[in-house]
Length: 262
Length: 303
Image 1 (cartoon, rainbow over the protein chains, first blue to last red):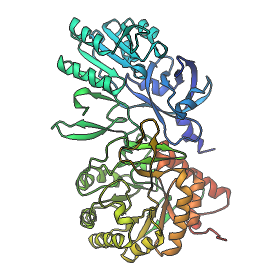
Image 2 (image 1 turned 60 degrees about the vertical axis):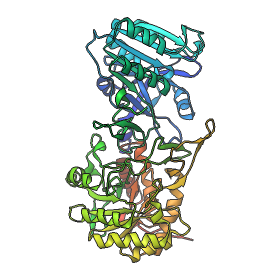
Image 3 (image 1 turned 90 degrees about the vertical axis):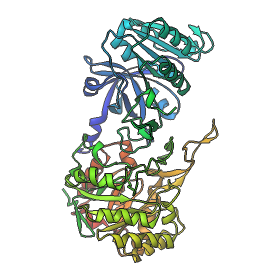
Image 4 (image 1 turned 30 degrees about the horizontal axis):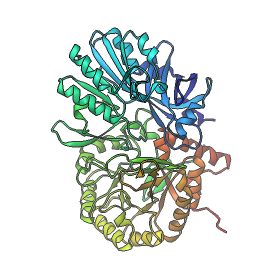
């Protein structure tokens, strides 16, 4: 059928599925063109099969340009992500990718601190691969059962610091304490963060206090994913300091911390 | 290959499928996927006299077979539209319907007057936005207000004037007749249905605006019904919309009385939706031995 030509443009094959924790899943998707274009911080926009109206935006966790694959790690939060978790290798997904603007990439020998909170941790992995041993990855989770990707981060050569709210794995407490210690030990060239809003806000405040450039990856309920429908609004300041709405899908998901109205 | 062309208010459309206002911005986001010349027309993002920042997020919520939105007419204002967006749109070889809105009849008239001196093909007056406090749906839910704003805009422009109606009314035919009497050249319907969802955990409405406009397949039967009622009540052409997801949906809305069909939520889901719907409509016409899409309009055989 002629109309299949449009489906084909978005259809991608699932190469591998792996359950990481009770709620978190890893999916490797074959998408030669998208993998060739993707940069750290961008996202994919997947339409779960079934009677769903909206796509689900999910951060890219791995970019393998040679294999032509992208990896995503997502948490089952509702029916849409539950449907995605039930896919198997060989199934196809309807995916627009890569979308959005990624993190600013400094030269590989720059000292950067990467902060990930919970399911905000996955987009830090491509950055850790870029910076390797010059990166410090501080990731925080609710408890030991929610911890993901620590082996992946260790393999990049980055220094890893694990925190949990209840101390059941790594250090007890929030990521902000080790963040300040690392800043004081040696001032980084940049801080990149993705996670819950209070965590991003605290990381942005510390960056501002120490005068370090900081970029944050934001989340918002999203529509088209390409900047047309204007639903995923994010309150920001323009160059004159006036408030305006930018959009997470097109202007983000990565924003400079100082332009976000917290 | 059926003849897909349709003619509305003397304007030729190469096919009857038009991205609806709001989901398509000013078109440029979609040009990375296909040339806009493949589309029958484009209804551009609702534009007001002055720039509007829109509503606080969240602005979207998924619903069974549909979605709610409350963008709140975020747009850069008519002067920006005319200076920056319109010249390119007019070079795209498709019909441009400039969707306009305002808080008062005077603002709507002022916006229309500015467009009157451009080469835009049609003006679509939105009297039905459910997401702004002033104007918007307030115009579209009473015959008096709908007539007043239509009269003001009619005086301001000689362009073909399409008035976009709200479904959030007791009798849409009464509004349609009032607007037709004031000189509307065509009607488009339906805008979204006012709806609401609540997050059980936080007891907060999902939308920051509390309420928003429901669209998608869930509203399609309401659209079919209202297009049918309005097409039977007025003499001017009707452009149908509301949850069209496929070529067969488009054919159904045309049988109900629509001369062309706008597509909204389907595009939010899939940027290629309008092209797929054009192809599907074409295939359906061929499979049923119908030579021209225009022949479908109003051919429902009611019991």
